[in-house]
Length: 157
Image (cartoon, rainbow, N blue to C red):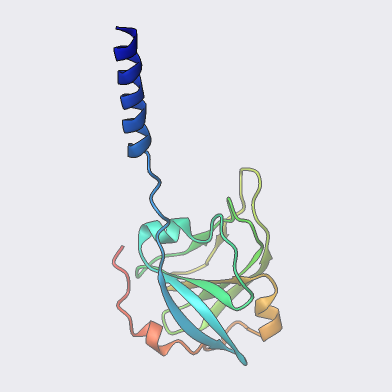
């Protein structure tokens, strides 16, 4: 009886272990964007789960960024919870113009975290490694070269 109970316990533990498999983080589409004289690999995230996950727990190389693509009418609000690195947050309207830059935004280690919110509905937020916006001379009102991205359908959710 004892060996049967041990075998059943082992089977149950094995079944539980197999059913708790972590799902891989959702990845977006990779695009190339020319900013100033530098070429960046930009990961576009356009679905709710990918936008929610963002760069949490990840790092960026100096030539990478993440572009959040939001549904029409969204007033983006970004926080830095569970981030490993500081970022520049570049807010971009539906025409590809920079409307605001939050520079050198630090990770949030303890709640409550600061919220970096746009003052109007926008389509995109581009996250770049800290200091990149200043190094490239990005400014409010600047038109970014993103015609291919602007031509994509606006996310519905």
